[in-house]
Length: 155
View 1 (cartoon, one colour):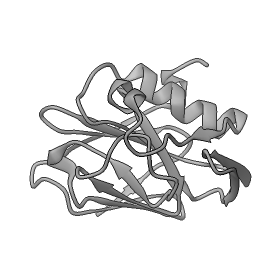
View 2: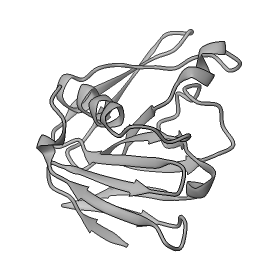
View 3: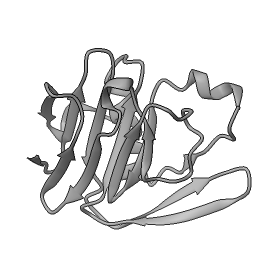
């Protein structure tokens, strides 16, 4: 299903978790910091930046994380598998042309930007950035999706 999206956000809401998605809107470098070093991935204007709250919670931190990446090219930090801080990450973020949601991975430990930890209800959902919007594939049958304007958060 295609959902138009300009400079605002698309919010996908489940019963106990949510995803927030935005287009990158410009070319920018995405720095991914790992224990082993740094990887730089380029983002194009139609690529996506998605924030997931696998256990739910307030929307504002997810939108702020998106804006830190989109507006300020804030680097992503990837924790090593088994890191105790992973369980304290209420919101995790990923960016790229396509993002697959998985509930079987540990939060904040995946340098591959095509996968993002999400709530069980979003398992298998795929988001693809396309010109002028987002292609949403899979997910729960009664997925609530709403658009929010860009001014929904000030960073």
